[in-house]
Image (cartoon, rainbow, N blue to C red):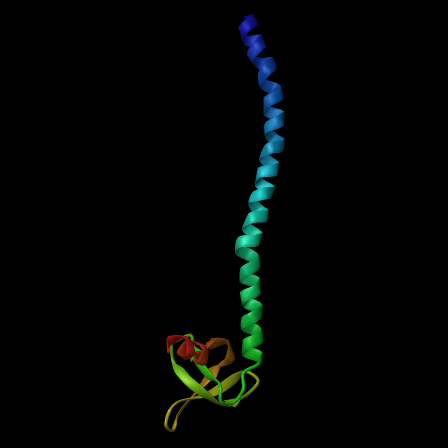
Length: 108
C-alpha cells in the first residue's frame, strides 16, 4: 500500500512539468514551420505578383501550360503572347509563371 501512495505522489509533479514542456515544444514547432514553410511561400508569392505587374511588351515568358512566347500587348487582365509568326494567344496574367530569358541564359 505504501508503494502505491509513493508512486502517486511522485507521478503528479512530473505530469505538471510535462505540460509546460509540451506547450514550449508546440510553440517551437510552430515557429520553425513558420520560418521554413509559410514565410518563404509568402515571399515567393509577393515576387510573382510583382513580376506579373511589371510585364511589358517584348518580354519572353512561359505560361502555366508550358507555352513559350513573347508579349505583344499588355492589358489589365490579360496579355497577348506571340507564340510563332502570326500566331498570337490571349493569356490571363495569372497564368504567366516565368520569364523565359532567365532560363535560356542559364542554359547557354
